[in-house]
Length: 261
Figure 1 (cartoon, helix red, strand yellow):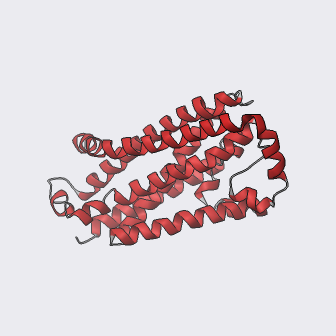
Figure 2 (cartoon, helix red, strand yellow):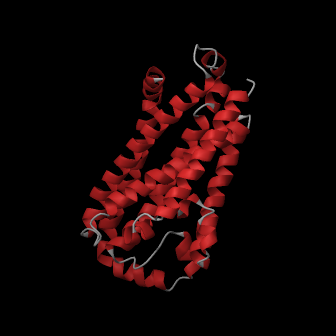
């Protein structure tokens, strides 16, 4: 198992570095955007306050845009979309890409059971997601939080980064589940794209309507940056998130164990 995990980490390192580079460029762009807007943030906030609430909700604007928390939560909303795309992509390609490239026939004939192979890929992917979240959290703190003077909640940078990691894990396990059910890699990508868009629109609907039940239907709302910053991570949502991840992993592992290649 350890050898399989090390091999998977070695194989996926270039892919991870590319996504880290994209994340750094995006947050760096947001940093320079702040430098150009910081003297007129009050005017921007006033303009946003006159826009329809549904529109500002769709663009991730929460609270007072002129404050550190308002700016951070808005930019974090868009930065996290990239993180969730990476997590979904990782979940889909975990095994499905092996099938697409024809290497699964060799991989699954090794003197180890399929479950061990799948679990080793899941563990390696969880490590990659942890690295991605930690790097993203560090960049957020240095380039988004510090330039605005810091947040009033001193532990917010850590808790929101943990929330980002947990949400990535949710999207990853859903991607793994999709790839185990949908046979073709291209079709799995299409289904996962639909799932991400549906999660986004459900999150917008939940925030706009205030209906609590809708929060539980979208992974984007389980550890919302604004709520986590003000109230911390809710135990109920944490337990529910881990339950969903466990169900996805168990079902996907069984599907891959039975699947004919």
